[in-house]
Each structure stands twice: as C-alpha cells, then as structure tokens.
Image (cartoon, rainbow, N blue to C red; front, top):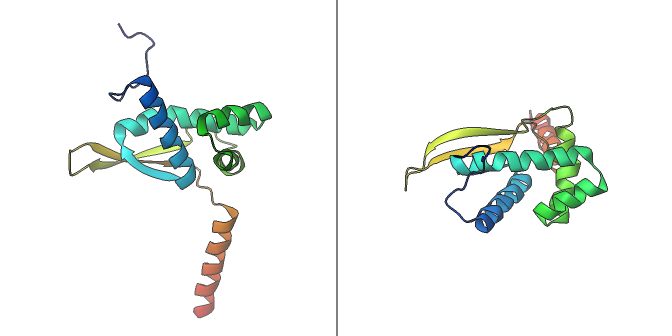
Length: 139
C-alpha cells in the first residue's frame, strides 16, 4: 500500500528525478514560464512553492536553504527579491499550470507552468515604459 507516499517518480531514479526538478526550478525562476509535460509540471509545483515560502521568510537561513536547491546566487536573489516580494500577500498557490494539449511527436500532454503574480524586473519595467512613451509620442 502507498499510504502517505506522494512522490511522483516520473520513471526516474531518485538522483535523476532530483536533478530534473532542480533544473526545472532554475528555469522557472529564470524565465518566469516554462513549457513542459503535464506530469513534470505537477511534480514541480510543490518544490517551487516551498522555495517561494522560503523566500517570503527572507532570513539568512532561508537563503542558504534555497541556495542548497538552486546552487546559484543570482537565482536566489531573484527568488527573494522579485518572486517572493510579488507573492507576499498570497497564502499559497504561487504557480499556475495551463494545459496545452498533446505533443505531436509522442502525444505527451504538455503544459505551461508560470507564476500567478506576474513580476517584472526593474530593467524590464523601465524598457516597457520607454516603449510605451515612444508609442504615445508617435501618435
């Protein structure tokens, strides 16, 4: 019986599965939205949401725990500085999974996983404002 066993195995050994989920975490934090299979997206969701909960604490210990998963100071600072700040008022459910249909090659169900609270870095926000100013100026 599988009582209290909720790990999705994804047909991989434990070390391979851990590496896969860590890489998906890194990609999601870096790109804000990734396209993957539905099973991987569902397995990724609890891992990423625990990282955001760490980010909301914003202590040295929480940063070290996040670094143990992400292994990148840039991603840890992005997680704590942008993603966790955008989700500060939310009690959970930081990610959204959108089903896309089946992949053409092998009919695997595909999905987008993305952050619910859209955040924009300061550079991206300033570039958007510049583009909006140019469009308004041309009209």
